[in-house]
Image: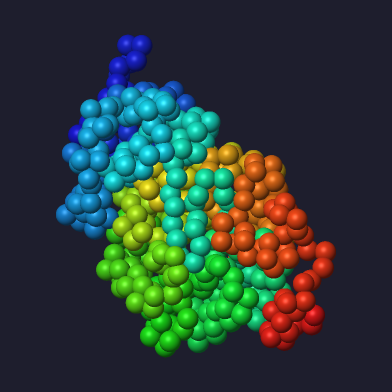
Amino acid sequence: MAEHFIDIGGRRYRFESLGALMAAASPRRSGDELAGIAAESAEQRAAAQMALAELPLTTFLDEPLIPYETDEITRLILDRHDRTAFAPVASLSVGEFRNWLLSERADGGTLKALAPGLTPEMVAAVSKLMRVQDLVLVGRKCEVVTRFRNTLGLPGRLATRLQPNHPTDDAAGIAASILDGLLYASGDAVIGINPATDNTGTVVTLLTMLDEIISRYEIPTQSCVLTHVTTAIEAIERGAPTDLVFQSIAGTEAANRGFGIDLSLLREGQDAARSLGRGTLGDNVMYFETGQGSALSADAHHGLDQQTLEARAYGVAREFSPLLVNTVVGFIGPEYLFDGKQIIRAGLEDHFCGKLLGVPMGCDICYTNHAEADQDDMDMLLTLLGAAGCNYIMGIPGSDDIMLNYQTTSFHDALYLREVLGRRPAPEFETWLESSGIYRHGKGIAFANALPARFQHVLADAGAPT
């Protein structure tokens, strides 16, 4: 491991490895402090950022943070690196790359072409030198468009995942939440249920229910039951109507092993979903969730900072051309992101890094009840991510997930963001909303004052009172 150092004001700051330099340059967060790798002072952090700014981008190709021989994620990142795409920035340092990203030369088309030439470590490094406004500006430039039954990620659009979780997977309760979300124009990214148990029979039942609703009302969206990839494969083998295969992923081989997965298993899941041919506009069939701190919580972080490892998770996601990726930014808890300030910064970093790598990033703007955060913090992150061009956010009744017991964003929050920033739903979903009477007068303003008669069956079929 090569040592890195910088002389400032007659004092030499030494960093024993590239990983140590990256960790010391990271903005403060509780997870890195828990791991014992954070900068010891604001002065040391500033010195590390200055040293990092002088580092050539090519260093990350020459000095893998985790050895190539021992980690399949490192092998994936380096084997897939496109040197031709990298050529326009190959001569730049990390600091020069930051300046280039903020310049007019780095427009949407240029950044899209560059994405295969960037490694997760490169984008993690440059994010550590950026202010909040820099993360927003560059994130806004990046457009990543994906398709299954509708088109996600187009400019001027903001989609939502309708998340109708129930602590007992009760069909009537789930149906009521789905109907509530649809009437508030939520669900174009996906109607996605976190099942209370990872039971194949329950998963098949929920997938069948979602398929019946989407088919009956001809909703141009997709469904997902967020079960383990092995359960999803088994459900497909049982004939379940599966649109998307979900999996939580991380940035190291060891952390993914803790999730019970590896790259070959993810490929098996992707192949299984694509074999069904259920997409009408595209075959982006994977849905991934990530979050800073997952590798540390699994004791699989290799002494690296959590933000860099999070970016490596996007390197995994990129391999599988997913429809959706989102960082569940504050879900793991204050041990990793202590307060609202850290959560806000992390959410913007994650969106920036994912988009720059060509990943269709959304965000679960959330916190746990024992974190030093509240809904005001989430409103700030929500608004900043909207300005940054986030592909989608979560839509949950009352912003309170009654199954997972955490706080996130509501159907109303999405309406706020769409109205304030002039964002619209996915185009195919918007057309359906208007034809269904959910939007009035083509104004793009959702309402739920009355239940259109055609939707009475959503509740009746699930056994709920109408």
